[in-house]
Length: 337
Ligand code: EPU
Image (cartoon, rainbow, N blue to C red; front, top):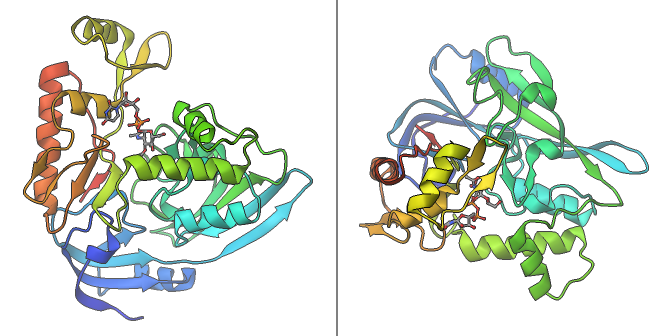
């Protein structure tokens, strides 16, 4: 067990926030993970995956356990499907590329999402009409107290919009160690209904797209709107899209005739937080070395050297302003630490 002391977490969070961990260990097998969790020497532990969905606002005075379990395995197949198990520390997009190379369909719309495989179920990652819940068969997780591995079926994960049991009832109780996907081997079901994908495929002059083409389209769209965390620190969408009652939405429409909304049911409408933030005047706003992305108002960015506190304060200012103008509360999607 190699435990590092007083190290910077800057390389381990996509926001690029420079805070320190009092102790840090990178774990590459489950037995070692159990051993570390048992260690009495470090009573406080902090589990770190790909670091793509958090904002660190202070030093972490705990043993940071970097889950770095690697490996991808084909478990079984039949004439139509393949069951693939990926360990938690695999980089999400590299796993997507593995699937595309092997012509396995189902996750092409989730191309280029930052983060690791193991954190994907926690917030049920989603983009362009597909969510993790549509392709996940099950996942395995280590119970932090009992040190037993438990398998969670898709239903047991209680997936919702950017939500799962790992963010609610079982928050902090499990470490996901692997995820098993049920993917298509042929007769792939393409999800190109999302407007921007159709447009992008048209502009690429592709009439009968393959899963590789859909992935290319998604990558092009993401690259045109979302900052690359390797260049500009960010955590993707900082806020969730709020859901309002149909009644409230109709009222908002009177004052803001252009307000977009996706009808969820007879009584609920989802409003793009990006539109609210842009209309509130924050899109592209820069404060010192941080701000709101120029091409997508849902994304807060660290241009280099900003503190987590500064970005957190900006998020608070955005929330208060949006509430004042629209009477809508927008909730952070990223975990504030
Ligand atoms: N919009 C604006 N201004 C903006 C941004 C968006 O007016 O600056 C409005 C536009 O009306 C646009 C609508 O919002 O038509 C929707 O925008 P977009 O298609 O970019 O999607 P989003 O709702 O902003 C969500 C996810 C993204 C995901 C995209 C595509 C959430 C919180 N975000 O964004 O996920 O990539 O859909 O499916 O649900 C992430 O979670 O990190 C993430 C990037």
